[in-house]
Image 1: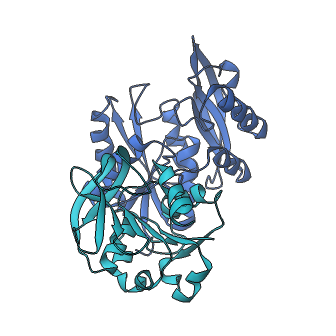
Image 2: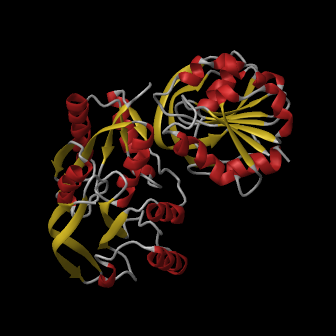
Length: 229
Length: 183
């Protein structure tokens, strides 16, 4: 078990990018595995700006295995299994890394797939304190923007904003008042990572649009490019 | 102090947060927690601790089971011990009770079958295991799922095993082990 090769289930958000970072500290990350869901309310897969994962893979200088899914509740798990099989065949991975923090649904579905394929499954953020997780991102100089908000009282003013100490304090207050998950684990907030310690280049957003619909919205990245760090 | 024994294949592995830090985060507010990898535990140091918790590990990880001879101290000590998942399997093997195949992944209904201080009635718990343990003369069975034995207690010592993961759901079981059994 010395020097495992791992594939990271990668949505481009803060959790999977931090999971990748922790995995790269201990083992070899061989590829990213991304599921592009056509269902905006996918049970398993984060959706805003999922297309940016291709650019993030370039920034990380890692190959990406990308598989599309219609995003129906259990069918998307077959597509995830297909993607992991593809990553195993193309990159010889010994295991998969997820950014699951609290979701037993998400974690156990990936565990079942890995068990069927006889490969390892790692959840390095599992049960991690939510506020500490956000603080770790700042300490490690991750550049994270809010790319979707889906719960009251979050509004369009949050979209496109960069995670900083003030935002963590604000989210902590809202979690006490409204019961929001600080990290957005319940799907209240989606994020996109523009830089991390593992990025060889940064991502610069050159064209974007805020799309708001009654009580939720997304910060849609229309154009972005790699720039030197 | 509480000793948490890391049953992952190596010290400070990528599975540490998932199976060890998750236990420490529940117990740290109750008492100082010291983590040691299973190959680093020495019987002479156990006197310093009020109790011992053996962690679980990944489904693919068989190193602790292969190294069951490293756990002889479980039989010798009088300290309360709680084994979680792989920890329960190790406790069973140390007392020469064999394992039996039983794959369960995800939320599982657990039924209490013998009164005890850790839990009661039926409850849902997170399961992640390939093996359970055989019934034996050495252990009382405290709980079962529809498929296999889920919790055991040594008949004469304060040694408990739970196959499900109380650090994921049912954290009060860990707290009761420290407060009520390891007081």
